[in-house]
Length: 477
Image (tube, one colour):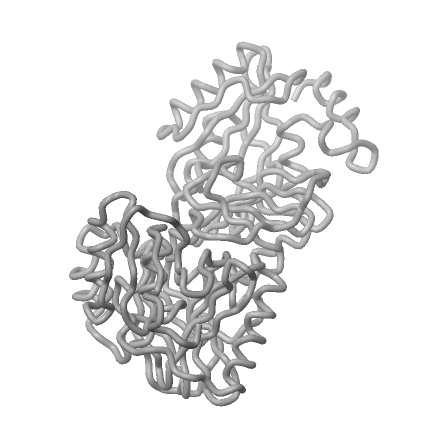
């Protein structure tokens, strides 16, 4: 570094004098690295003969180690890059916004040539390791107790649809359960953090969370809008995401081992005391009652091959601890805000598919399920969930947000010009086929004792087909 550059360095503002935002981009990155894990990098200022090294953060190397040449520094960066490639971004001292960005360079010679060319144009460069954002992890922004994130994206991906939104405590719980480590985003309570989270350790500190930017918290409404499907729920499975939210909210969820396609297996939940297991499929998005749920263990490879041969519909499989259930069922909030609690004795799977009529539930069961709904409603708003009651408490088996449009006999409101009658003894798949082939401006009358919270009701609600339970068939409504 020249004497003039050394003088400029000594005059640079210190963190206790000026906002970090006033620093040059590479100096900000170096300051960030003093507290947090950042992508490994080497930065350069333009020089008369050669680019002049400024900052350096490489694993197993002392901070800001000076290399004898640009090729030696870039070779050291390449040798430590998990992906074996590097990115180069450039900026001027007057304008920190990137002026040129090159992604995924594969050779030392190419990277050195780019740095030298940009330096000759009077611009600064930062060469950093390429970090794969499609490795099963997530990227996002954490600020003031709110975390927004999505997979297969940079942190700026939260500016486009599909991101998940959770309170910090819930995001911490979800990340801990799915990835097995504490993301430790607590610094975001008073600041704004752009981060990425990775199954494999990354960056100069070799940890699972990489910080990309750290600054002052913005002034905006930081209330999490917890809803799904989103891109992360699609990654791990709709059913899994709902159970993770219920678990994060402090509700009893049976111990569940998840085997996803793109994330390593993980386990979460609370011990039910049973040694029996259920196998459950978790589709990318909810498809009521279509995919297998079975008590006991069946060949998971055959199951997936049979139900999702193209690998596009099922995100994961679940091995879930059984609940010794005296009653099981589902609960929904109707369009007027009233709660419907329905179920049957035992494990309830025949009730959910519509082949068993709802039973009169004991008062203690209704009271317990209602209490679960109250707790969920307090943090999520209107919800729908499947439950199992073991004689003392209610377990959550599936959870979704949002109120139902149903009210009384009417499952889906509407005034079609004609109605077709469907005998519920024909089964769930026959109803699904009817919905798919139904002429326009036609509604469905369900003939039989069917639960308003069953999968049959879910199918017509999801399709938004005007549907009612045939009058006179349900005197309890």
